Amino acid sequence: MRFQDNWSPATLVATRDLAPGIREFLLRPDGYVCAPYPVGSHIKVNVLVGGQPDVRSYSLVGEADPRGYRIAVRFAEDSRGGSRYLWSLQPGARIEVASPTSLLQVGWQYQHYCLIAGGIGITPLVGAAQALLRKTPNVSLHYAVRSHGDAAYADELSSLLGDRLSVYAADQGLRLDLPALFAGLPQGTAVLFCGPMRMLDAARSAWAACGRSAADLSYETFGSSGRLATEPFKVRLRGSSEEIVVPRDRSMLDVLNAAGHEVMADCRRGECGVCAIDVVDVEGEIDHRDVFFSDEQKHQNRKLCACVSRAHGVVTIDTLERADAV
Figure: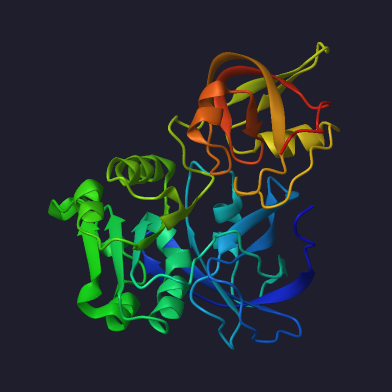
């Protein structure tokens, strides 16, 4: 595995509501030491879903805080249950968290940086803005939300960035025009993106259309986002009559492991590829929700990341041929 998780018991010190449906949680591990962590870091949190232990990953908000780790969680009725559990907790609750890790690649050699957030994707970019501003004043942030009231951390970011912060609220008729934005950026600008999958697809397409280098675009997404609606689907095992139903509130990875198939995993965010499994056949459509595989690989449908990707219909997989999974 890429990371060795170091788990610690922690206390939920405080919560605060940032926007309708978005709540910040301040978690302080026992023996906490305020130490810097890489830009784009996240922590894993132990949760209970349907009374069963599970793990969720959440981006850390801002740079290292002497009070503890800050995460912001959007309450999602259509999620797998992690947000529902966290929202049920009150200050003083005990919970286990893992130490921070990051998969977001940030190049520090650039003179200009453009940060782009969609909805709750703002969380890792707060700390990115803080860190990058110590290097150069040429940092802008473009923040797309459904309504201005949904713009978590807007006041904090406005104080930090001033007129270099642009908020695009759909209810006010404001739309983030990615092709126009990218066309106007100075050459050699690095873009850091975090948002839903549809927005990421649009960003990558617009970036390529502008003739920009793929190396200058870094991104992450959140695994609950996809092109298709979340619904139950079936998984068949190659060479077996076994058929497993993946309910809408659980991941394929969790269901396979619960059935005894021991699929390896690491980030659980669709970023590292450790949980990639072979696809033998598809009766329906796969909804690739990872950022590990290329567009071409996703189109080929030969593999999928079991931690976040889903399907409509039936997917036949081979969990035994693991040697070339990543």
